[in-house]
Amino acid sequence: MLADHPPTIVRAELLNSTPIEGVEIDPYILVQFSNGQSRQVTDDDDNVIFKWCRCEYTASSDTQEGPRLCIMTGKPATMQCLLPDVTFEINGQEYTHEDAYFSSVEEFMKAWPFHKRHKREGELLKPRRQDPSRDFVNVWQEISQSRVYVPQKQDVGRILKLECIPISQNGLYTGKSMSIESAEVMQAPPLAPARSMMEVPQPPNSFDPRAPKATFQVLTY
Image (cartoon, rainbow, N blue to C red):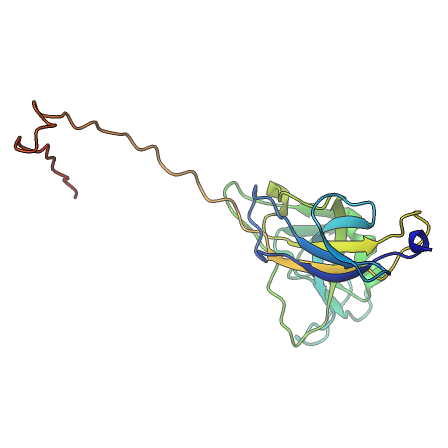
């Protein structure tokens, strides 16, 4: 029965891969049903579950800087925190991201509840850019279950991910999901300065083609 078969997600795409704070993200999602019919998903749909996630922290699994020790266990480290605004407080001692090394993903996640974030007013801190020659671990936090999403202030400098999960009409079966990731969310630009309009007075008999035309001068510096 058609109700028992979830659709297949044929295409999922962010038309603008660089999100901007306060600007709605409207993804393009195309699904195909078992009867061969295809359609674009244009609203929250009963046949697709949407999950927006924000990358909360990123770690490198290759330190490339010689032997380091895990701040949790003292064992040789294999990972480093890459968020410049994060400080870990472990056993009364603070570690900035330059010194935040871990022996495993599990130790990294154990330390996360003891982190603090420091951000100066007006300063935008972003994770260190990922080197494609190294292996990384991204940890995601779910932030929305709607099809469209408007990036918030806390998303600035972070990567967003949309996961699309097809589901059958009777809600009992799910199909193969598809995920897409954005670039780092950009901060909203400042508002344009207010501009005053100046009215140019019309000379007498301005509708007469033989009358002198209104003129004005523009001065700049």
